[in-house]
Length: 133
Image 1 (cartoon, one colour):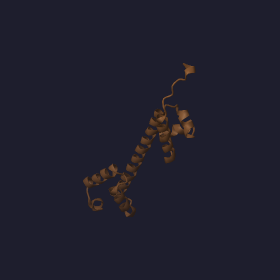
Image 2: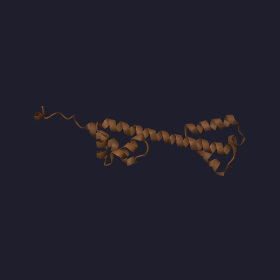
Image 3: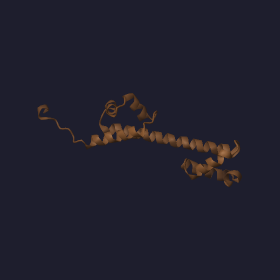
Image 4: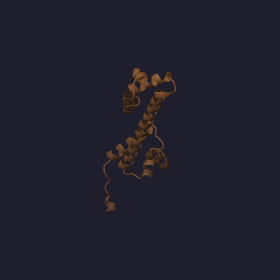
């Protein structure tokens, strides 16, 4: 806290860098605690923004990672997006919002997606029947 109150731009930039590396880590939480009682001017306000912006960026990155994983799962299933959605018990339009990151699925739905793809990959490849040869 001394670095915040009496430090220079060099110390403050090191604090901000630590916050960016881990927006919910020890440094960020310590700064957050300190800022609850700090005034709304100067360095305190800049650090508030650093914590807020770093957390928002981390959440955006997590949202993008979940959306990418959902797209991977759809592709790995071998199903059309509409069929994949139907197998999950949701609509194709809702699945699209998950795959683009506009909406975050529940943890339960994400697990259902994972299980569906696992089940699809565990099935033996279908062979044409004698009558269709």
